[in-house]
Length: 405
Ligand code: PLP
Image (cartoon, rainbow, N blue to C red; front, side, top):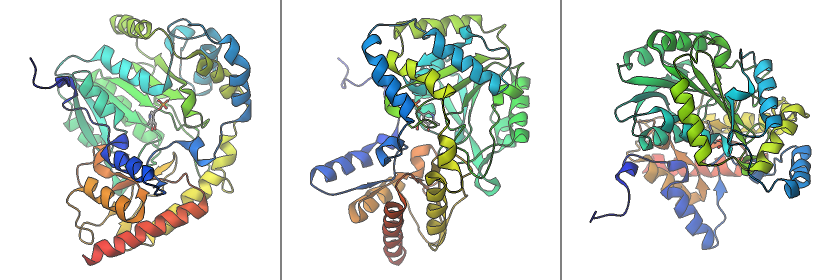
């Protein structure tokens, strides 16, 4: 008998956003402590609610949404996604190319599972959204991280990408806008990634779940729009732009060069069938969301809550000695750096524990995003201004003590 019940497949699988530090926070809450949570992008939990028409739609549709649907999803929301692709200038997308899922997460795991054999490599950004590293490992593949360069606003280092390609490299993941850095990639960077993918026949996996959460008048280009001769999978959903992560509504679009991808698509279809279908009420919300009033624009406008909170968190953090931050252009996060000369952190998970224990503030340590040096952390700027001021004030107090140790 195996000495442990846990599958060996999980040996290299890690998802620290909901890891042991969160368990500790839960325990502290049970003991009666109030914790300020800057750890996950759970927008609605901060009183930033989804558009009312989506909520009303959910309520209205619920009684008629108890059945299974087609495994790839219902016609009308998939059609709405096709129209969205047209708006984003992704060429040639038909209903057949659209898969609906219980959030983008399910589809990301599915897409990697259908692709990878043992030893296959996938290029992933560092820092990354750690689902990708975990899902590549779970699928039997090998995650290979390419560096995003803090000195150049966290842009992917194209030379590093090229250096890390081997005969086993199958795909490259591009998270744009980026979690955890808040970076937004210009077309010139996207074009260079496409060129590398084209030359080495890599699949592009594009995570664009924050593509409407853009500050300072920025616009977003889908990498698939620049790559109609490369196989692209684009992931998106209602969790972030529409603040409805609990509705678990996401989609994946297959575009570009599909001539050699028929067996892969057959595999995707089989995995989609095995999980029967995405939840039906969530599917039905997609067409309303995409076609409705885009209230995210009010939140990211200079006077909007998300933009004001981003500015506040940035201003407060950058006033702390030894803390530097690249100001996010998009998404909900920043990834501050703690100067190692001032904060000689050896184990950043321990650092996160201590911050939690002493100041009741929950962040996620940088290594949780596959950033190798213990000198960063991720903060979500979702709490309202008073709570953010309180939270960053506590972080500052903790860091002041840390410096003096
Ligand atoms: N992709 C990125 C980059 C994310 O940050 C998240 C959640 O934080 C997800 C995907 C998960 O999306 P969903 O809620 O649609 O599963």
